[in-house]
Image (cartoon, rainbow, N blue to C red; front, top):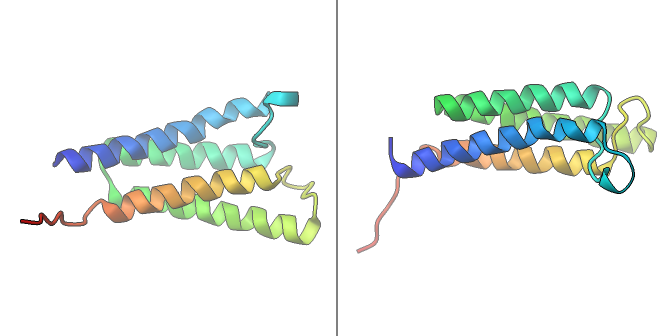
Length: 123
């Protein structure tokens, strides 16, 4: 494996660890509650974060893409909930959850897509 491949795998593992670490925001209130991860969204974020960690540790492009697609799908569900219900009381999420899932999803998808790109050198 190339050094670039190992870097992509470390980045995938790091994004997964960030997702898992976000569970601490379940207990945050007041000024420290800048990401709203509560209710069912905690289980989704933890599961997808663990999938990303496994993807990074196993250097699996497929699992990286699956975790990224999962985060994008969860962002779409959050967006749909916010548009249709406004406050989204049944999911207990807000715009910060949407941006968090969207950012992780895009990041993981880009890492998965960059995995097998051949490096071209210019003379």
